[in-house]
Amino acid sequence: MKATHPMCKLQRASARRGAAHGFTLIELLLVMVILAILASVVAMKVVGKTQEARITAARTDISTLKTALGQFEIDNGRFPTTDEGLQALLTNPGLDNWKHAYIDKMPVDPWGTNYVYQCPGTNGQDFDLFSDGPDKQPGTADDVN
Image (tube, rainbow, N blue to C red):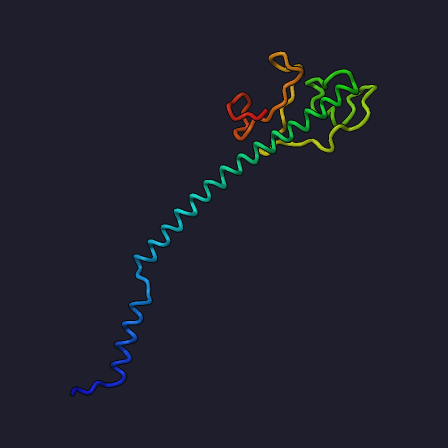
């Protein structure tokens, strides 16, 4: 019978265990690629929701401003002119029946620009009130009103 050194047996067992429990470079790269794909899918969904949230915030601001304009009209018998603008909701433009500020502060849209107000409005409306939207250009498809 051939005698084997006890250290040789240990080294062979250790080598077998290491191969069975380790990962190859290909396996690690594959996992990294899968994680990158998942991260990009999640990021795309989050970016879309951010834009939706900004549009919703703009619509909420516009609704609040419309309510304030309605109260202004009840108190003063008219809407602010285009020249007076939305600032007439904060400071008296020189009207006798102006009672108080109708809003706490002048909002800006979620893209950092002022809301557009025109009185009289187009198409028979009392006034137009909208945001130029993400592209900050008036009259484009992404305007929020």
